[in-house]
Length: 119
Image 1 (cartoon, rainbow, N blue to C red):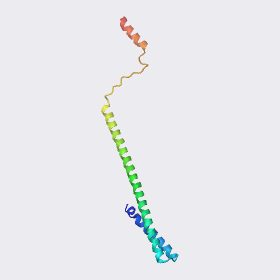
Image 2: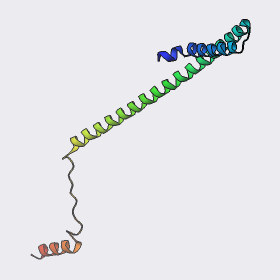
Image 3: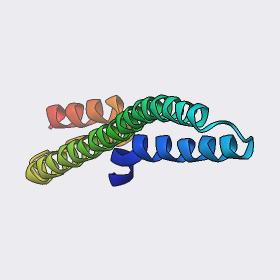
Image 4: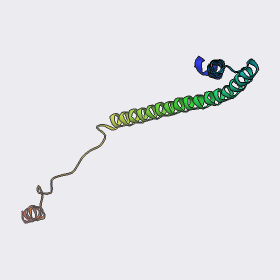
C-alpha cells in the first residue's frame, strides 16, 4: 500500500528523468530541457494521482466483495446449524403410522368384519 501512496511521485520522477536524458542526448538548450521536464513532471504526477485512485478503488471493491462472500458463508453456516439443531430437537417426536397398501385390502377387512359379525 505504501507504493500506491508514492505512485504519483515515482511516476513523475521516472518520466522526468527519461525526458531529461533524451533532451540532453538531443543537445537541446538547458532552458528548453527544464521546461520539458517541468511539463512532464506535472502531467505524469496528475496521471499518477488518477492511477492511484483507480487502483485504490479496485482494491476497496475487492475487499468489499470478499467481506460480502464471508458474510454470506457465515449466514449459510448459521442457517445450516439452526436447521440441524431443529432436526435433532424434533427427532423422535414424529410418529410414522403408514402401512403398506398390500397389507390390508378391502376384501380382507370385509371378511374379518363378516366373521366377527357371524360369531
